[in-house]
Image (cartoon, rainbow over all chains, first blue to last red; front, side):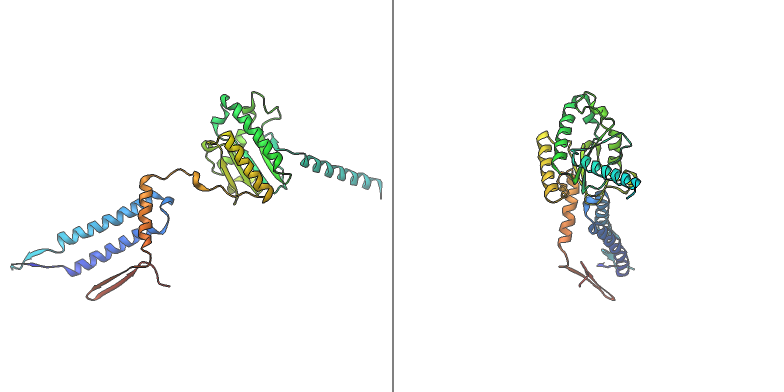
Length: 71
Length: 226
């Protein structure tokens, strides 16, 4: 029988570090006008988006899903 | 009073009188030769800087002469407290065929470099209340200076601008900095990014993000509560 199993500890560690990285990138993105350094702001914004996508993908692929309860 | 004293006092009076007469009769302060100093003790200094090579081409001589005439009229109408400075290499008739060669471009370029003025946007008219000290150009454009790039302006527009500046200088003794509307338009992606930033910022302090994961509780606020 397949059961849904989440690796809570791994999830917390992954998303805690990931959130810090995203928060730093977003803080950089929001703290000064885009006109001052457009390229830098673009990198920060894309990094924040990609980091969230990467975290979601890792979570979905490796840290959760259906697993057999067989020993 | 002894004779030397009388001679000294008389000389001092004559020098002072001639200096004042010379200053009163000034139309435009035409600084001639590379070593000629810009005179001091004016309330404002309007510097005309020719750094754009396009304005030195033979076909532009008529335009440059017209510009000089407009600037000369500007210098005559802004009063004796305000200096309008034009750099020449030597004293000649302004309307001769070598007008462009006689303009002290090298001197203008030193100002343009130090004050970070784009040559292609010139000729420039810089109005400042601070004495433009050429020995201290590295300190940059004096604060509160107004810079006008005349490259894309027609003679009529330049005439209008000079009339407005004359009004400001005579009425207020200073000019307001021009708006930055003349700046180049931003690229589409920069505007999109700017809009994204404003949208995210518009959330302001209205939201909080709570995490309650067993032993770990976290409260994220968009901004610090006062």
